[in-house]
Image (cartoon, rainbow, N blue to C red; front, side, top):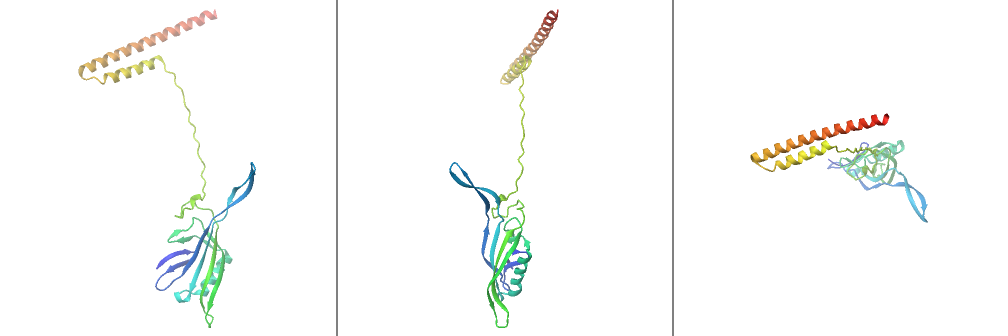
Length: 226
């Protein structure tokens, strides 16, 4: 049995023993708007989305195995009761929300002399009765659909670092060692060792100069207090 579509237990199928089909599938979406005016121009702005609407016409025939009267009146009863469910087309949700049957109109009824219904058409109108669940049904609906997610803002703090004399010396050591890495053999080892000794000496000299500066500064403060 090839099932074309289904809704709330009603299966539209094509098989050797049963053909229950539908025609005129229409899917409608729209937005509620309001008129606005600015700079001498008139335009519209969106307020809300209107409920999605699906309509189709079920074709029922006793010659293809349908119980025409019972099935047609069942649609009418479900429209009065506001029955709702997902509409599946080829095994997938037509739109990602449940649809309520809001109207069922029976027409083109053919009845045999004995009172048996031979065939009829039932125009069905269904409307969105729940929020979109945010998943795509393959119809491109979107999750336009609208699950809105909050945006997360992250702040990035930047800090500035003052380079001291010892850091400059360290950078010099790195450059010297990098340059020494380009040579080979004992010559490279000797140059690297010499660069390291020079760097150590420079660091020691910088430390001594810093200590001397601090002592001089303290002496100046003492003289000023006196």
